[in-house]
Image 1 (cartoon, rainbow, N blue to C red):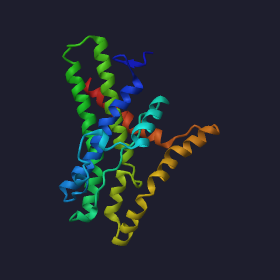
Image 2 (cartoon, one colour; image 1 turned 90 degrees about the vertical axis):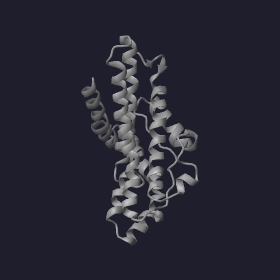
Image 3 (tube, rainbow, N blue to C red; image 1 turned 45 degrees about the vertical axis):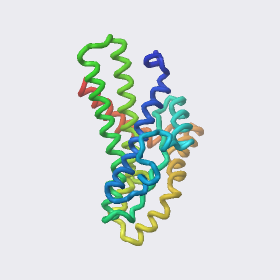
Length: 229
């Protein structure tokens, strides 16, 4: 099977698709917070689409390369865009809207990617080989955006889906929730990736996160391209 698209290795294509997906995701958080009255992200220059403003050495560079080289879905993260919920008139509503802005941006980009691909391919302007390559690039772009969306919708701190939790917490519990968020990412990575790795080492091939992403991002991408094709 050909492992290149337009002569470029698939792993490189996946990483190229990953960069705008994660950058727009983070900028969307900051933009929503800014619209709700919080100037933090804007004052720190994080409303920029320049990828260098959002690079995390491990999450944006090393982790996606390792995942792509291993043949799995490209996954990673950028430096979280800072925001201060104290600026929100309604903290719980602000948390919810700011948290869901990132996944919403990935949903929109994934759908737009599929639409653009079909607008390019369906008229028949390109040869069959070029059309196949265009569809493959679009498929990866949509799939990666949907992976980011569904992964971040998991309601576990510090993922975006946990913003739903804030809506239901009383004031005292909400303060405690903020205090543990800063320590939650390493614990989350261990639960989602460390434990499955250890299990695979002892011969147990079970990864809940892979099953979840296949059932959500994988099926939705397949459905979307099936509808538009």
